[in-house]
Length: 322
Image (cartoon, rainbow, N blue to C red; front, side, top):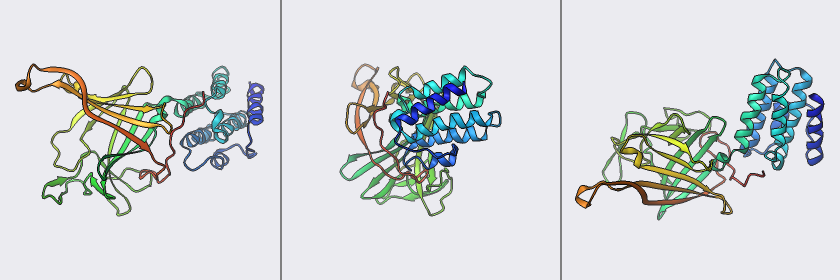
């Protein structure tokens, strides 16, 4: 088995213009990737797991880490099938490779090569003259996790969520009252979600869900006094690409958003559409719960900006080399 993996490493080396350090460990991996290479960071995370796995002998660990370092160094070979070859060798040679090590490589392939990664970016759109909405999206395809950190800004100033902490309210310029957003978290680039401001960051609305699993109580991105939040859940469409996020009740399920990366665009564009029942007003005619586009159909563009969550520059998605 080690011989087969060694052959894979030699093959990868022959395809690479990058010289990998002799020490095949997480520190060496970090030196090979750009600071905005999220997929590369996932791979280096797998190397770190291998380093800590006491069930691997040194030769096995070094061989698999050498392969992982080549995937980190050469983005163009990551999703060509070579990682799948590595995984199959590990699966067929248990217990030489531990269950933990094999599972980590399997999860890394999902995190790096799944179509879900097309959602991963710092997306920005202008919804009205001078008013922009930011969706800083973070994806973990291995567990179907989606996190969106959102803000609305006007003329460079944050207008939603209102910048107050739990239990606090503020008066808006128009005289309306606006209170702490129920989904708000404070982000300062530390990689932590805080519930108290420290003066180094700002409040963002966090919407997070597990596709096909746990949802969340959704409150709209706005500045107001909140009393209309609803429970929503997300699912992935059969294309493995588009997401639907909507209510779960018999009536509420007819209100939902669909998020779709448009792969035919160069650079990629992120489309968000909102659907609602055809008619719920008896004075306007027969009740018709058939979902139709509400008129909200927005295209987000990717920007290479620093994420308020972890302080790292976000990269823009490109077509996966399959």
